Image (cartoon, rainbow, N blue to C red; front, side, top):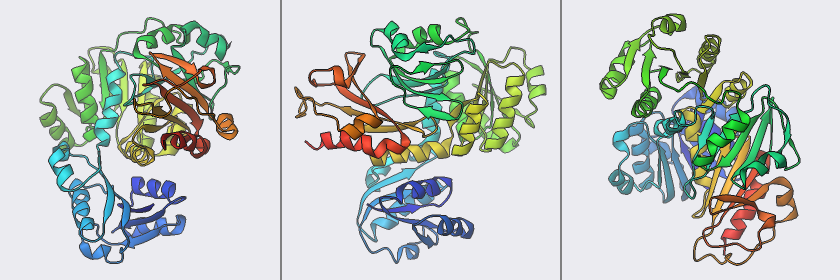
Length: 447
């Protein structure tokens, strides 16, 4: 594809790095340092100029398959979509937005935008499950099914067990999609083992999550989550506060910037206690009238978030969550047994890639910091695959794990006799094998 990216910050850089392998990529930015960094490290065409200035696009003469606007300013992203349309034909446009005001179908239609990405809202959605499943590290949802992909850490005294033995307790209601052990992620087979301190990725339905907890976690009756501290009164901190406030939590949102605090207080309308502080956790804990159950470091500084999460763990706070915007810091956080959730930049990066890789009936998502990939392929009523069972290529079968979701249960793909209407084919694979395995699914969709 011919792809143009407006904005060479972290998101633009990572997108260009990922997409340049199989595509013709052009990236535009006005910052000298950003453009120089990309020219020195990536094999893409760089244009130095303002993305809201039509003159910047003068050398773009070919039709564009995909235009991605990911600068830090909503108005600039939207204006760039309007400008590019007057220069060349654009098949698809993806725009990152921060302000909820612009999430509007009329704006989307008038500017011919295919997809609007709202990272702060997307990240905050993860916290809907915090109260219901306090033992869960992270949750991913899908359009085609109510099944959740979630991670739970086995406690330090967990008795090792073979995966086939463990899942036999659940009557086809769970899949173990991946295991992270130390710094290594793997897609396990049925004869592999679950060991203490493993971070285990499950695909299951909400009604089964607490049953998994009883078999994995040490504390079966964890203290109910009631009181939460959030560091960072930025847009993400505000959106997380909204979600948790609706869940009935007592929230203290803290920022050292008085303007951020004033803005947060205006938006949240006193539903959350907003405090101007220098992030002194000792003072915050001492001044809290209730025990703190949850600590969330949601600033834009990953290193700061890690330090404060370590302090929170030392204070004995039961659930500690760190937001990250750099993939390398996610690895460090998990190694320190800090629960990790993507920040706005990483959410934008992965969400855009998922949109690019998706088709009309295939969903593709990354998990475990991008080390793993899950693909779902839904069987619609008009599918030619109904009553058939396409053979999996030997290479794909060797690299991925294939299942069928049917009637809220999971079956090994090799065990079913034929595909039925509304079945969902699910495949799990490591990142390096994504193209091989995902291409088999996409091949089946060209019916």
